[in-house]
Image 1 (spheres, rainbow, N blue to C red):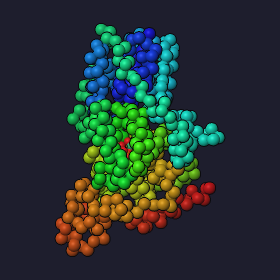
Image 2 (tube, rainbow, N blue to C red):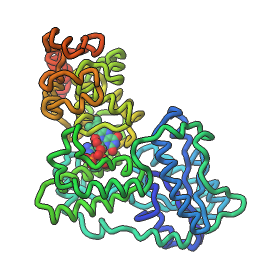
Image 3 (cartoon, rainbow, N blue to C red):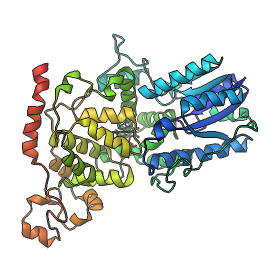
Image 4 (cartoon, rainbow, N blue to C red):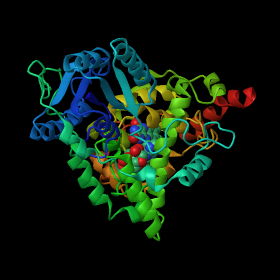
Length: 476
Ligand code: FAD
């Protein structure tokens, strides 16, 4: 009769699986979000993601208030707060959407057990992916570990039903006024120890996602041509919204799928393929939770990495002397976003030029990325480090200078983040250390003072990496 809907990475009220299912089964509904101290306590005071969550929840609270209810938000440990709220509200069941991360699975199992011991249920639904867990399997009923056959099987299985929106707005007729003893509304950012002014440049909430989708509608047909050039507005910038569920994956996949049917260009099918990568990495994490700490291919854990703290710091701070790498890291450090091509370039640079363990880079990204998502981040890092499923072969080593010449030919992206190099000619901006000292000085650059010399020699590093990875070949 009475249900509690627990929001997590699905901060919206439209096309929401758990909300829809709750309304099917309960006449009275409450909606809650927990700022989970098990996650938040280890974050710095300045974290754009927490502000984004808060600002995305404010319109959810407002919409519930319009219906005479309110969002119940707490700064507490979710595993304790949710059963406690269910008790206070007299809820028969808690409804929530699946999360495939190992820690979330453990948390949900603990919550389910506490609820069960008190005669209540935890009812969960698929919401954040199109296909989950065992829904797309090989002919031998095994999970896929190679992307292209997974994508083909995914596309074959896709039908109108999977893309259909849940009419969850109707569930709002069922939200109930809060009992006097249960406070509604959001705790202040200050009371939770976070800086409310430390924002992303991205507009939050469903409205923010809607504006981005509308704007991308006209660009999707060029996506295949523009997506690789960091100085160009090529991608959708929807990753943060997908991460926090301020947009429904069904809506995005439906939009892409419809455009695949009608567009003569490759743009929409390339973009849909990226959404399929997202599902792919989620099912990898679900089936192989060991990837959180280990290489997907176990023999790659024989590799001995260089634990070079000084080089790692130079990479983090954008002081490597490789302009594209440095500009990319400055983009990450100043905005919390990094273009996909650059994520591949800097990850390859860390692991194959500096010989540093991919897990160090993965951790740094996890701290800094607005769109940090364990499944996609781990997948991306293991791809770049060649340790992952369907990864870049280890002998294919990106040359950071030629990546720069190819994808930022006029140095437009580099100039944006490294203004000290702004006056260098296009052809030299990728490798200032190779310029005539006189020409460098004429462009106002004092190498080693205004901008560092390269911290490694790419050709030497390349050879070292091939030797480092030889242990893998020897093992197989
Ligand atoms: P678009 O190009 O518009 O793509 C649309 C959506 O597809 C993205 O929002 C994202 O949800 C999904 N997507 C795109 N590429 C991938 C991919 N390779 N794997 C999985 N999903 C993808 N993406 C994250 O969402 N979170 C991360 O923490 C993350 N870490 C990464 C780390 C590395 C080392 C690499 C190489 C990639 C990582 N990616 C991650 C994937 C990708 O870089 C981002 O999803 C993308 O840059 C986000 O920008 P966008 O929304 O404009 O992407």
